[in-house]
Amino acid sequence: MAKNILDQLVRYSYKFPMHAPDLLKEWRENQALSQVAAAERIGVSQPTYSDYERGRKIPRTQLALKIQAVTDGAVPVAAWVAADDRTAKPEVA
Image (cartoon, rainbow, N blue to C red; front, side):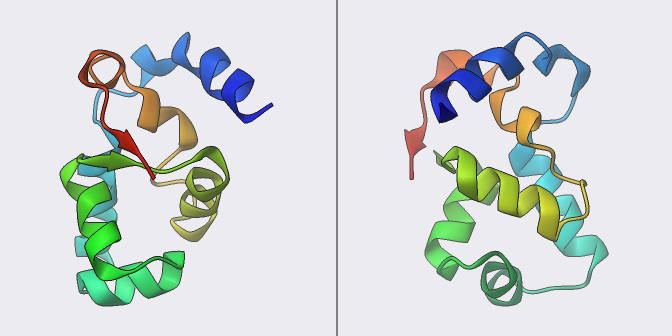
């Protein structure tokens, strides 16, 4: 089911000009949070959070939904499947 959600969102990814890693970093900086504090809010380790923020990894759908909730929609699930991300093939964690 999770794969189907992401597949459907790919069609709408053009609506998000910024990639999720950029949005995640922008959200963290706007909240004046360290990576450690942001990672704790999301429920991941700081190294994993850093990988998300740098675009080295993309979260699984459930975690992407949690990130969307924690960030009050500043990092929508669909942003993780932006057009350029579809060709990059980052590691899913």
